[in-house]
Length: 229
Image 1: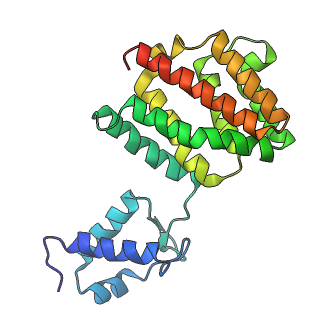
Image 2: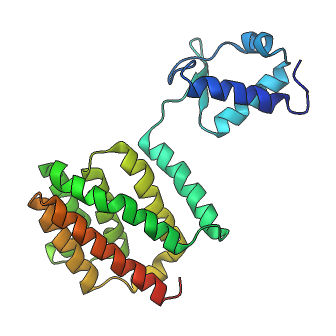
């Protein structure tokens, strides 16, 4: 018999392990509550708390009806990314990580992403990039449009894991720095950088795209340091 004090946590960990090792595959139905009670030799309240814990982690979801039950969730890029964004933002807010730490990770992920975007982009990707930043169309741009441009580059790399890691970090940085601090960085230099990046991606010049992204992020890092962030 599992100790009552930690019973639900122990049961949740066992089910979590079975989900991660593929015993319970994404989209599959978990055994019934009665079967879970028998398997783990615990009461209904313990099973309920264990499933509630897993639900809060978005590992399982409850479905009502004749064909209902508790199912293992099917992960999406957006959902995984949102979890990472929250975690990173909280870490930064508690001073566990710095702006420099976040910018370092942006260098690690966005520089190769720019190279992949140049080699893998489609015509649709180019349209999305062009529409994401008004400065590419000789119109006034904003910090929001600049951030969207970076996200579109990552998406044009066509690697879901890059999206999971990179876009949440960018959003977390935006949450921490804030629009007010970021707004002063909007100007001809950023618009020029984005225009050059876009041209390199159009030409499918991966090396140029990576070099330009590296220079651009170096400039952004220096800007944040100059403002004491």
